[in-house]
Image 1 (spheres, helix red, strand yellow):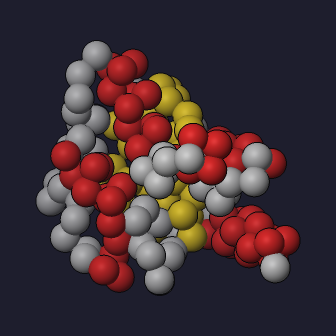
Image 2 (tube, helix red, strand yellow):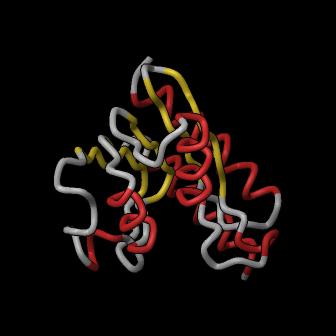
Length: 143
C-alpha cells in the first residue's frame, strides 16, 4: 500500500461530498498502514463552517486511537488544507500530511506555511489532477 492507494480512498470520500452537494474534499487517516478514519466535508449538511473533512477526520481518528494526538499517523486529503485545518493538524501533532491538489487562494501554504507542526512531513501533488478535476467539475456545476 502506498500514497496512491490511500489517496484513492480519500477521493472516494470526496465523491461522497460531491454527491451531497458539499465541496468535494475527502480525507482518510492512516496508522500502521490501516485506515482508522474517513471523512468528507459536511459544512452544508451540518450548517457548520468548521465541518471540514480534515476536522471530521481528526475527531474520528483521535476517538479511534483513544487520545488527542495523531503522532504516527498520515492524513491523506484531496485538497491542500486551509489555515484552520492546518492549525488543528498542528495541535494534533500529525506526523505526515499528504495532499492532492494545491489551493493557491485558501490553502495554508500560501497564507502561512508555518501552521503545521514543525515535525509534520508534507507530500504534495499526489493524484493532483484527479483531485483538481473533481473540484473544477463541482464548481462548474454550481455556475
